[in-house]
Length: 422
Image 1 (spheres, rainbow, N blue to C red):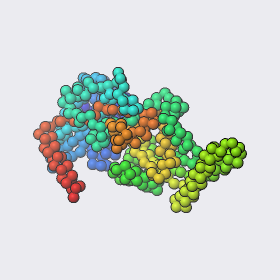
Image 2 (cartoon, helix red, strand yellow):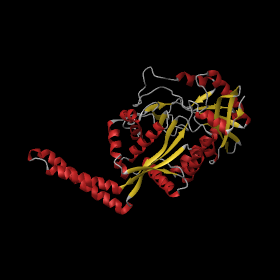
Image 3 (cartoon, rainbow, N blue to C red):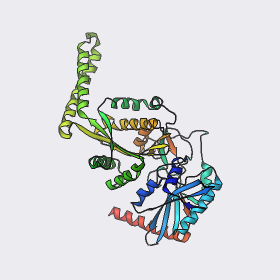
Image 4 (cartoon, one colour):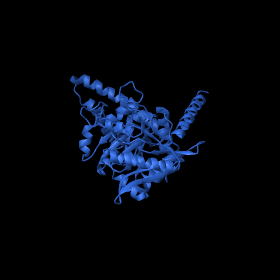
């Protein structure tokens, strides 16, 4: 029998569940309530112990006066146990129907088929194809094996680095050589990581500006500042969110270049005449450094002695640290702020005994011609495995109303498309 759970017992169960993500928490329910959803924390107990639980988000459907339900990242239960899946589905169906629901959706973070860092299927690797067939057998409709963004409520493809029982040195050696080189270059002392809180409105605005810039560059619509503020407020109660900014100290970087210029100049003076080719290469390097010095001086004049160049929003829940949002100013990418930020947060995850560092969403396309290849390749360079989930499922509770809902939604999409063309 499905029963209501307290926030404390639900969060405690969720944090310790192997399929746990921050989506399945009372905090995520609190955030979504600020956007028009209603949260339900429910579960099944045996002998007073929770054996299955879920956050259900509920939203009213205009005109129909009925509700739709969504369990973000699926139910928290044993997906190897078909009996508990069937029982929990049946109980949730009754609960949804009792609360005037038409359907509910789930999208569990369960591996469909194991893949490596390049996206290739691992021969004889873990796979859960039979689970997809079982869910369909008991009444779920599968949204398909999607590969692009926007086809599911949450990405079906993510990028995850396993850090369980690993040292910083062991993890660093896994990185692509070019990533290691860029990280080392970023550790010269001119970059630093700063925390953002919603009490510091100035820093929050800087975070939002970088995210808006990145959204324009990559072609996505960024969240409103109030959404980020609310998100921080609900998750920071138990220290389960970090918003960070990467600051570039231009004065320190300027001093570094001057020192390097002096060292190369002295080296040229001490070279014998027999090393003319090496001297020419060093002379070219001097010219590049002089140009860079002028560029840095101009930036200091226009932007000041230091600037924020990169930002990220990270979720800390259960055994996983998730890089959910992030952005950078493209004109400052040569300072490798994104690489510095990721390495600092990976080290934080290792030091605090997280099992996984989740780089989160990618697409299921891995060729260089794909639109999102750069994002995938950046995450792949940290030796993060491509993770393909089983996808999104819909369970229909009221077929007549679901038919009407689909008709309405189809008309709505056509009107929206027509308005965008005008």
